[in-house]
Length: 335
Image (cartoon, rainbow, N blue to C red; front, side):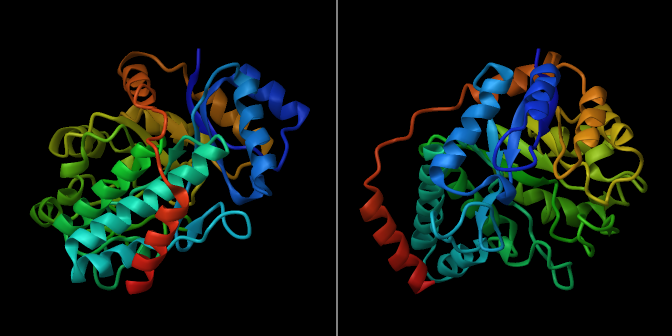
């Protein structure tokens, strides 16, 4: 039975040790990074080998947003714009902005599906504020919840049309963080009413998406100690309750410095708070084993949500890729 774990691999090919580890640990899914990417043929063979190691059609994830966060890029794949570019076009022409967001995501999905990647950690629904850490910055679609939700929804629809599942991030919001959670624990002291009308509000229209990723951010007005990823209050009352998200909820990478404790402790705290899945990236082989040992089999509501998400995988809808790229290029130039 698959474990409540998404993990990574070290290089361009799976080692014999990695194959044996994945066979025994049986993670639910895998995530790809630049270190795993060389050419389309290589990457296609690599994603095949990941699935072969667990003997099933396991989901393979990637962070392919565009802008600063793009694991597949030139010369084999196009460079895509950051989210703020869709927001700028939306401000000039809402219909054109939404069309560009959908089309960009649909083309990203085409690229990913071609190499066996069927989940993209996109869209963001983070709403940045003045003086926030630039870790979100121009990755965001805008600074108002309605605009962010509209563009994020178009991106999600574009991915789904291309046969790729979207991951909504970073629930319940990373836009106010004054630190980069890769390096430190962000603490937000904003009052609940403001959070509900801004940060959390952007996620409400997107609550039916199949997959979501938490924010390693402390919201002191709701939980003065634990970041959302490991906070029972934030997961149960805010993400599941107020926002109403019932998709599969994964952590952000538990190896990030925002979290404290051993990796096993982080994994147990994540699942204990109510997340369905632990995401672990960029670790050593020994760290992967530690996290796997702390990640139980996927059962109960977590399995129900995981199965429901995978049931949404579909064959891509027809697309004239050449014409679509021409249209997208023209729209991107306008923005």
